[in-house]
Image (cartoon, rainbow, N blue to C red; front, side, top):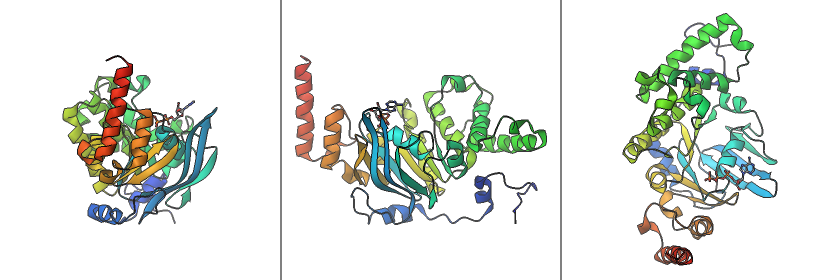
Length: 330
Ligand SMILES: Nc1ncnc2c1ncn2[C@@H]1O[C@H](COP(=O)(O)OP(=O)(O)OP(=O)(O)O)[C@@H](O)[C@H]1O
C-alpha cells in the first residue's frame, strides 16, 4: 500500500516516506553516554552503528588516498574526521556519498549496501554531504541554491522536470520547505539575494541548509568552520549541535581543533589514507599515533588545547618546530 502525504500525493522519495512514519529520537545524553563506554581503539564496534565501512580503498596513480580497514559511526552522534592535509578525509567522504568510486570495499548505511551507488541514490536514502559554494552557485539566488539542491539530490532528469503537473506541485513543496529551512538559519530574508553576496559564515549556513533539503538521516559536513569569522563560530557550532539534538547523525571533516573538541562526541583520525586512531576528543590528542601523524605532515598544527597534550609529546612538537625555524634561518 502506498501512503499518501497530507496533500494527497504519493511520497516521491524514501525521504518523504521516512518523514511520514513515526520515528524514535533517542535523547542526546544517551548517545554521548553510550560512547563513553567504547574503547578508544581503531575499528572498535559502536553501541548503535548507523554507518559501517570495510576495506574501502581508493588510489590515484601511485597514491593510496584511502585505505580504511574498518570503521563504524554511531547513530545520533557528532563524529569528527580529522587528520593532516592529504590524509584522505575528503576522498573518503566522496566515496561514502557516491561522488567518487572506490577501488574496493563495502559500506552499509542502516544495513543497506551503499557501495558505489550514485550520489543522488545515496542522498535519496538519507545520507548527504555539503558542498562549498562554487562560482556558478554564487551567481544564483539563495532560494535557487536550495531548490537546485533538492532537484540534484533527488536525481531528477531534465525531461522529468518538464512534466508540468508533477513539477509544479513538487516545486511549491520544495519552496515552502526551503523557506522553512532558511528561516531556521536566519537566511529567509536573504532568499532573493545572490548567494555570492553572503558572508563566510552565512555561506556555511547555506551549505548546511542545502543539505537539509532532502531530510537526511546523516549529514556530512566538509570543513564547516573554514573561512568563518570567529564571532560566528559559536553560532555555527550551535546549529550543528541542534541537528544532532533532533536525532540526526553528523560526521564532519575539520581542521579547527577547537571546534572539534567543543562539539564532537567521537573523533576519527586519518593519516596517509588509513584510520590511525579513534576515541573521545579529550583523549585523542594524547594518542601517540595522532601526534606522529601531525608531526609527519603539519608541524604548525594547533591541536586545540595544549594542556591536553602529554608534556613529552608537546616538547617533541616544539623541537620539530624549532628545527624548522632554524632551517629557515629565523
Ligand atoms: N582527483 C584526484 N586526483 C589525484 N589525486 C588526488 C585526487 N583527489 C585526491 N587526491 C590525492 O589523494 C590524497 C588524499 O587527498 P584528500 O583531499 O582526500 O585529503 P584530505 O585529508 O581531505 O586533505 P585536506 O585536509 O588538505 O583537504 C592526496 O594525496 C591528494 O593529493
